[in-house]
Image (cartoon, rainbow, N blue to C red):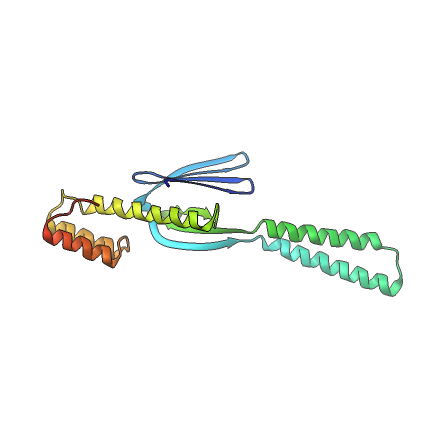
Length: 191
């Protein structure tokens, strides 16, 4: 799977894994944005973030309190302001709905210079997104191994590059030991 399509409301995103990075297309109504991040710009940090418009929750509580106060006034003073109570309750329900529908969960892979890969969390589903992100990191790992531990480098330079890849958490300890063993046996091909 080299492509992931996501949709959240009127926002459409397309992520495409290239040979040297990830291309992102983002469309929301009439706005369109497209960029590409190289694997060298993508870091190992992954964040889950929630974007809520908290102001709408405050508005909901204000409308709810006004409705309660009007209800109490109507009970004690027998006023005929039933429509006013319904209006304020309706406004409270609308503001609560706006708050709930504006809540978005994001899964972010951090990049250099604030150039992040921002996915809608669990869109189209959790398994598809997990597999796509794993594929990004796997292609990234292969890219770095091919670039920095290739046959064109001397043995000691390959070892320094391998240590650097391990320190930057591009490869894990198992991969580091496997590549180091290949390096000591003299066969570095086949990433």
